[in-house]
Image (tube, rainbow, N blue to C red):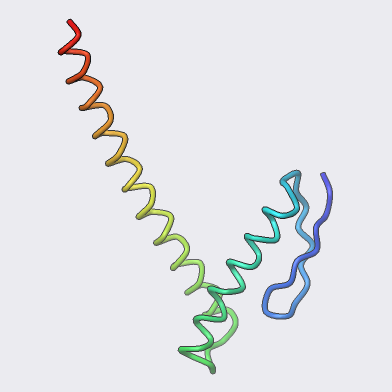
Length: 88
């Protein structure tokens, strides 16, 4: 495992990971962008509240994508069953 230093809101964070460095840096940029969006709307918000709001927004994106993926998986299963029935 190695350490990759990233910047989020001007602060350095050492991320210990086995992941690709470019991937980790892209994650840090994404988190930084989300936090900056919050500070643009609410410049006087505390760092803790901004962090929680950013985490909530990212979790929302994740859950919506998971639901979309589940819908796609169900649709593919239905299509596969239909195709399988046609081949029988």
